[in-house]
Length: 91
Image (cartoon, rainbow, N blue to C red):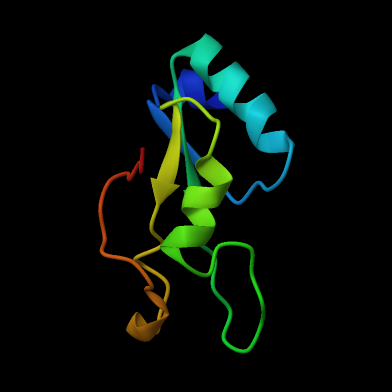
């Protein structure tokens, strides 16, 4: 968090899962920084956020400080599962 603030970042991303998301939510809200769940994808492997519904379920009960970001720069292009956007929040 300290490094993000030094850089002047307003948003950070990560692939956190489970109860750590609530801790991230509290801390980011406190610091005035938003957090986006990052959708890493590796062909042939299971990953926590395979669909928008997976992300929506992870966001349930969290504040608007936490949303989602899409990994749009990892080749090949067919790994992009969601429409690219700066951040996404389903309420």
